[in-house]
Structure formats: C-alpha cells, structure tokens
Length: 517
Picture 1: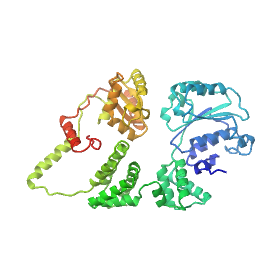
Picture 2: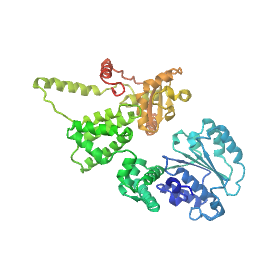
Picture 3: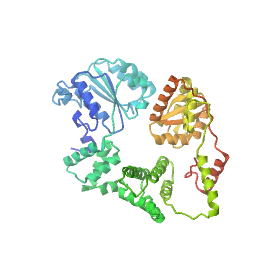
Picture 4: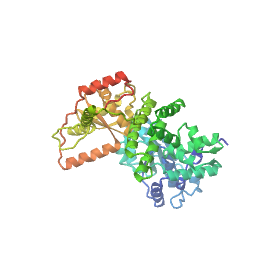
C-alpha cells in the first residue's frame, strides 16, 4: 500500500477525533441525537482547524441508521459505504464557482437520495463562488427539499453575502490551543514510533500557528529525514533561529556591542534566512520578555525599550514583502538600542533643550472642528468624513469600480484583499482581514486614489480591519441614536518643511528604505 502522509492518515473520522473544537462538536452531536439538525450550516475559521473534516463527520452521523450518543455507529450499511455513496456531494467552490455549476446542483437536488436518508452537499471554500453563483444558490438554500442538507465551509466568511449567512447556522472554528495540539502530536509520535523531544513539538506548534494540518505536515517532513525529532532539527529544517540566538543578539545590542550586532545579523542574512520568519520569531520572543518585565521576572531590560523595539520590528514585518532592504532596517532597529552618550557644551544645552521641545510639540497636531464626534488621526478624519454623506448609491458605484481594477496596476496591493463597506461622494472606507494589509493600504492611499481617478471617480480612501470597522459601525449607530452629528473636517496638509526633509532623506539614502511620517 502506498505511503499516506500523516495529516491524511490522522484525518478525523468521528466527532471524538476532532481536536480543539469541543463546543461546536457538543452542539452538533446534540443535534444528531435529537434529530433536530438544520437544512444549512456554515463552518468558518482559520485553515487546517477541521472545518471540512467536521462537515464529513456530520454528514456521516446524519445518515447513520443507528447513531450512538450523536456519533455514527460505523457498522450500518450507510456508515460502511460512506466514502463511495453518491448521496454525499463534495463541491470545491474554488474550481466550480460559476452559475452553470450551481444550476446543475439545483436541477439534481430534487432527486431523492440513492441509498441514504439525506443528500448532503459539502461546499468547500464557498467564498470563491461568483456573485451570480451566490444568487443562483440563494433560493435553493432557503427552501431546499426535505431530503437535502447544505454544509458550507470557508476561511473568509466576510466575503460571503449576508443573504447566504442569514440562511445558515454558523459555527466559528478556532485555532487549536498549544496544549491540545502538542498533546495530539505526542499521540501521533507514539503511534508512529517517532523518537522526539517535547521542545521540538512546541516549536512545531509555533510554526503551525495553531493549524493542525500544518503541524502534522511539519512533523511528517522532519521525521522522515531525522532519526530523532529535536528542537535543533526543527530549526535547521526550516532555517529559523532559536530563542537563544535572539537572546544573544539582544544582549549584544543592550551591551553596546555595535560590531557584534552587525556580525550577528550579517551571518543570518548570509544563511538565506527568511526575513519575515525571523521578524515573527523576534517579535514573539520580545512579547514574552515584555510580559516577564511586567510580572517582575525580568530585570535586565526595561519595558519601554522592548515596546519600542517590537513596534519598529512590526513595521519592518509589514514592509518585508515589498522591501528589498529588510535586513538593513532590522540592523537599524537593534542599533537604535545602543546609546552612546556625548557631552554637550553648556552653551549649547539651552538651545538643544529648546529644539527638543519644538520637536515634541510638532508631533502633536490639533484639529479645530465643529464636529460633535471626536477624532484624533487622519484615519479617523476620513472615517468621520465618509459618515457625513454616506449613501448606498456611492458604495454601489465604488464597488463596481473596485472589481474592475487590475491588481497589476497596484504595486504590492491585491484588490481581492479589500472590500468597500461604506462610501460617500468624496470618501470610501475599505475593510480587510489583517492589520498589516490595512497599514499597507493606508500607506498606498495616494496611488490607489490615482487609479480610481482614472475610472472617473475622484475620491479619498481609508482602510480598516474587520474588527475596527465593526467598532466604527457601532459608534455610528450610537451617534445617530444620541443625535451626535458628523460634520466635515478638513485634513491637515503636509508642511513644506516635511517635503524638504523627505527630499533630503531620499537623496542621502534610498526611497525604498526611508519612510517620513
């Protein structure tokens, strides 16, 4: 028999084998036990957390002729023939996303099941369906035949129309916790007779980010090439640094060893280290240090220093995919920790203090407005101004324009990552799933506005994360309820001095690695 990879070999076949989704599993088992299941479900959550596996287990339990406490018995004809029955229809929406495929589904759904109690349609990556396909599915999903059940699975639920969501029971899958994932990996290692160190399993958890499928794939890959699964073998296989290495780098920086910091990072760069992986590892390590400082477990470093370093490295992480000089920025982040005090002549001390005061004051920009809604940043100003004249017609027009924009025309921005959610005649708010993508969008506002202007629409844009948008929407409802008006606020203009500084910095360095804020 051909070798089967671990994530396929240990794919859950019963509710009991599904890891980390106890609340969802308990609810589904209760539905099966009481024969009170819905005609449509939607499973959403990160990749590799068991959505499709749970859909298959649920389909099997629904059609079992003799379920035991909500679980399929595994002995009846329906259970034994589950993998070959024509009554379980799996559809990959990524490759079958057109109207014709859904119309074919609608024409076949009226036919009674061949051997099972129910026909179960499992539609994976449902967010990939086209708008026309969603519309074609809508009526069928609302009033399917009594013998039909739909289970939709998606990693990007915000792309699924609300009309579809409202017709389904929704279950949100979460990432598997550290203890549950490591415990499962230990169990797999014992069954597969893999010799391991527990530190290696914790590192695999870190690499997988709570995705069980990824964790099993990593375990499978390393176990094939190493006699024993160790922390060192995991780090070597994936070319990542250990916490001890980062600790050594941090020690060099805090002790003022400039040459040590540069040598350290140049060695990592020469080893073809992936900059994003390195930055992520650094940020995770520093996060733990910051927590230890607040708990009183770490006394060699101060919280403010670690906080500033994390913020700088996070900005670097956001720019890593578009910046060719990432390691240069990383060097600057660590070199900034090194303080070499210089004596200042007494005659210059007053002027230096005065200059420092001016610089601090210049960082704070105050806006004089008549709006009853408080704003403190450019992003908030644009959100406020959008709400001033927000209307459905503008949103519909902008959505059409955005769908027509070719990703090749935008450097490092993929239009599919963003969705317009509110628009006035002059402003539009976009949402995205990740804060890094929102930050990147806001950095590229002028470029995006120029592309939209070519479509004969002169508008200013701003991006929020899904969570930020939910908060702003609630604020909007509250402000309307309490009759707090939104009034247009003029955006502050960049001063001529800022433009001169930026031009001078770009002359001295490279435009790619200098950001003037």
